[in-house]
Length: 248
Image 1 (tube, rainbow, N blue to C red):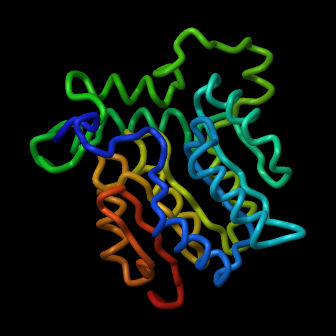
Image 2: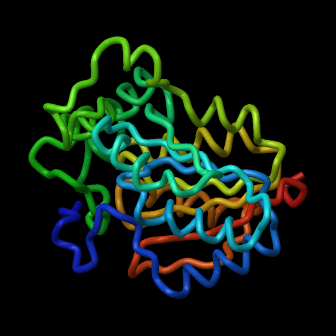
């Protein structure tokens, strides 16, 4: 595997190229999702703001709700401030999946245990990637000193946000955007495909050449229920539509 920071276009924020912007605008207009669920908000200034603007402009006067999930307490606070101008956006603090399931996935990931098996895939840490990604899902990788009080954590922090949101809104033809913790990207993908296997939805993946979603990309291309609407390996995104009737 290769260190992601060595990639020429490496960025912690999703790369929003003009083709992706235009494809999203056209696809949202045609598909008309009833909700958007995004994992990986960071500061809310990248894909979250783009989606919020596209929904606001294309679905006036009542755009669908956009739920965006961030595990880092400090980043969640900043993102909530950055996104407060969008009334249809709700910024959620927590983990997209179950923490223990995420830790088990990282500890037993066959690729992390044999990185030489995927020489062309990027990774965020080569010295101790398992520890790196465990720290990431614990929300302390980038802000170890920003620790909220017990009351705030118990009141606001939640796990399994994907299950909570897609269990409630899965029938509303959602757009699901997966761009969060690098070590559990494929776990998020398999969670989404399991929860939405009987529903039509849009799926946007970021970092398809990274540990995060290189397997998700392969799975999308291999599944006849998915129609790939566009992808750009240079900036690392893929947009697909899931059509459950095709695989029936």
